Length: 150
Image (cartoon, rainbow, N blue to C red; front, side, top):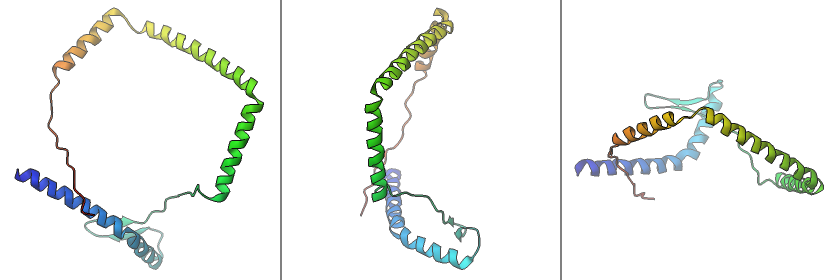
């Protein structure tokens, strides 16, 4: 039981350290900006030692809750619905044509598949499946659930 106990303790420490890292990350980002500003270099490396290299990165994020964007989303939705209503007949006709083509493609694929199968091939595949099933075995793994102390 000593290895299981130690494993549980280590996983718990990892979770606690992750929580601590998340808590100090905003301050670390501010510190990284200060270092970046003082370096005046093109590289975004803000820390480097034998344990780690930390690089500040800039990822693009968008605010889709912005009032202007929300209004544009509503306008787009209204225009789309209007186009659907005004072109309903043509859309229905086009959809019917697409469905007919899908049916033709399905029939062609079935015919194509018939060229690639035989009773002998099916028998070989079945035998392979049986042989593969005979090699089945269980492998032990450990599921670890850490109790967070937050």
